[in-house]
Length: 124
Image (cartoon, rainbow, N blue to C red; front, side, top):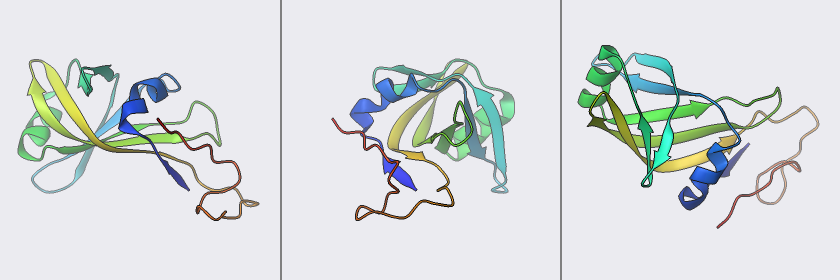
């Protein structure tokens, strides 16, 4: 089940999470995943420092994904798709979409909105 996150509310939502995984792809389209600490600055997510493979991948294929795992089992995962650009030692990622996602429990049944009864929509 997923809940769309209003990009205007993304900065506030980030406070519920700690680190993220940054997923890029190489020329062979194999995923390369690293742990990062993005910070929301001026409407973009800034990763202060990245390695050579991440920089090379983002330069060649700027569509990236950030995944913040839930703090506790059964919690929501925050997934943000964005477009990466070089930012000195790191990357600046312009978000294009974001969702809170969690695997439905065995007793969850979809509601009229397609969400289980434990969904809490975020709105502006």
